[in-house]
Image: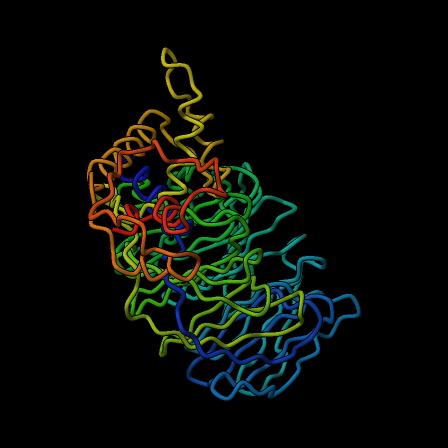
Amino acid sequence: MHRNNIVYGLIGIAFILISGTMVTAYAIQDNVVVGSYPRGIGIDSQLNSLYVANYDSGNISVIDSKNMILKNTIIINEKNSHPTKLTVDTKHHLVFVSDKISGKLTVIDGLSNKILDSKKIGQSLWDLQINSNNGKIYVSDLASNNIIIVDSYTMEIITSIPLKTSPWSIAIDHKTNNVYVASGDSEIIYVVDGTKDTIIHSINPGVKPWGISINENTDILYVSSWDANKITMIDIKNNEIIYEILIHSGAWLMDTNQNNGITIISNEHTNELYLISNDYTQYKSISLMDSPQSIVMDPQSNTVFTANPLSNSVTSITYDDGNLKNTSLTGDLNTNSLDDNMILEVLNGILKIPSNHDVDDDLISGLLKNVGITGEFDGNEIANLLIGDYNKKIEMQPKTVQVPGWTTELASMFGNTDDYQIPDKINCDDTSFSSIRDIDNVNAYDIWIKILPICALS
């Protein structure tokens, strides 16, 4: 793992977040009300059809993805149906729906919007993805800790792969046919050979993986964790963590547009989307009115759709992927973007540490957390960066500055300046007049010249 790059990435993003310079993308948004508690979402861009699995109302909403109009509602033929997630076979225009409660897999004809088949294949089905290369559907079963592999043409189970921990989200690399399975209750991502349907190895992402997505152009696996404060990026060729981006907790799921390489992650806590560039060093945030969970991107346009369970709605967001903000993930820390007040607050805590003590990692993390930054840090490294940057700023401050003319005009509004000798320069190191005790016998101009931050403004 490239520790320095990760440290700089965390701090760089944190300072961007704190100093308010994180770019918010302009986006056109539109909403459609759907059934109760929409959990899954998928798209067939050739049919301009968006499919939404409504968990509590037991139906599938079909939306015109171009005009954001509800076209149809498909009732799942079961009294206690809880459609959970879905995947779309765009070659044959079929929609496959999992059910967390009944363990059934349902297939829908996307052309007629009719249910073709429904079959119990497991106990508690969650995520599912179809490999368009071979027609295999990979389904995670939360209760049995299995990955169930189904033939999409016959709806017959091909095999099941037992796992040591509960499977959660699934992503497929169509270049290699490898299947990645995130275990939401442990720090494990299983890698499955999609040809032999056997586990090759596993990856430890350092968090409990919640959502995963693969950029097949760069061979990067993106990992989100709902209770962690970062997005992790893994080089799947070397199975190595290469970068981490600091975010707020609450990241849910993600999707990658393989045509433009943009990856988008939803955050239900902050009501926003994170848009990450193809080279994973630039990003934007998109603020939403609703709390997003599942998302799907239209591969043919700059549009992403979110399922919003708390508002029973789906949102269409057309985004601009230009002018992304550099995250400063590599190289030296860009200290010009640091906020002085934040540095002073952290330094104030550091100065209270006895000089014969090292700066403890947990302590520096606690100090940074007070100003809104969370994560794991090397205490001494961060302290040296902050102190060094602040000393540079002090050294750059002028020793003396010319008194600007506007101070006279301002002071004349509060008193007579005719009998006061106006100085040409101010000594920035002079603290002898830091307090004014005899307020009744001091000239108004004398007050203003002493309290105005002339040195700072210069």
